[in-house]
Amino acid sequence: MTEDQQLTYDAATRRDQGVRAAVDQGLVGPGAPVAGLLDVAGIRASAASLRAAFEAVTAPGTPVLHAFAVKATPLVPVLRLLREEGIGAEVASPGELALARAAGLTPARTVLDSPAKTPAELREALTLGIAVNADNPQELARIDALVASAPTASPLGIRVNAQIGAGSIGALSTATATSKFGVALRDEGARAWVVQAYLDRPWLTRLHTHTGSQGVPLDLMAQGVSAAYELAEEINRAAGRQQIDTVDIGGGLPVNFTSDEETPTYADYARLLAATVPGLLDGRYGLVTEFGRSLLAKHGTVLALVEYTKTSGGRPIAVTHAGVQSATRTVYAPESWPLRIAAYDAKGRPKSGPPVAQDVAGPACFAGDLLAENRELPLLEQGDYAAALDTGAYYFAQHYTYNSLPRPGVYGFTAHPGEPVTLATVRKPQTVEEIVAESGGGESDALLGL
Ligand SMILES: *Cc1c(COP(=O)(O)O)cnc(C)c1O
Image 1: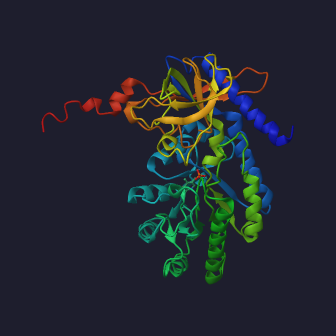
Image 2: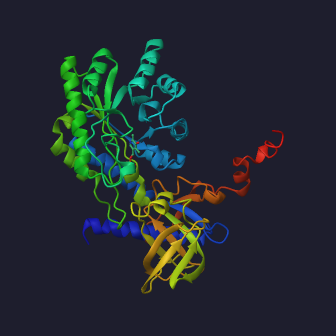
Image 3: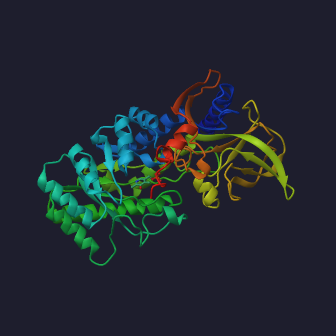
């Protein structure tokens, strides 16, 4: 086996062991028909490879903050685990900031980006000393007033959109000509405005860009970083000093959803950056990165009980408990977000058998609620489990409340071949009482007196 095959083998073996243990321990089963699982060893390995990839290409002593994009997996124990692995947090709402703080992330390890920050959010961030990237001139004007009113430890920057083009998924392409994010650099007068904004504000020391997410090819991401670097150089030349000391290059490394292989790797991307923008890595600039999906996706599994099986129009259908509530993007945009499905038997053992084309359906009451359509798998039977793989980012952690389906429990596991599996609760399953309370249960008479 090559080293890559060994890693691939390990991830699949660990997953099988985690599934078996979750079924054995009743974390998923008739009483809890769907659960999310997280492979802790896999998460640690991804964090370590991210750190190593940038250490390998930056000049010794270069400050690098890897800030995990909290939206990818907004779970406090995950943020805490990443913190232990040396990873900070990129937040984009008061809720995400609160999660990062609950996980013990310090302001110095936190970055606030969002296209719609309120005055109160900006004031809180500057009071705490959290880094802020201004999205637009109006936001910069608000920051001007705050900076004038009280000293702040926050590193401050502007987000720019290099308008270098889209990837294969429009909704996730942040660097198009008309993207809603940042200052559109190629628009008439915009570049000159950005340069002047820095010259007028000696406290603006960062520059931010995030060129895209899943579907954006690596060379396009590198072009986006290159455009930000060229702009930082232009501003520093105009200022006659190293005013911009840190470039925030965003996240967006795409994830392979077709096999257990982790490709492209952080090392691939870091090497491409070293070849494309060597000046950014020569020690004059600190770096911030904001990876989300690539840190967590491969390490999560949605495991769902097969409640019933039947046929329709001659096609077998497995009706499971995981659908649009846990895999929203896949259900609504199956062409852009196909997921691998693995079949397990009623004891949680990998299922074998000849491949049979079948639908793997969710529990929600609309026809399109399918995890996979016409997919070849060992025939699923009542009491088996269907597992949606690579769902550690932007899936079960981001519940969608269709049909008032409960948020499933999420469990972390460690599994090593030949050793017993240990599981820990990351998020408890939502109860029916909580659903009622969160759905106005305490205000049941509210409309009667109107
Ligand atoms: C979503 C987002 C990220 C993370 O993107 P991934 O594709 O999950 O790596 C990073 N930075 C910003 C500003 C984002 O909006």
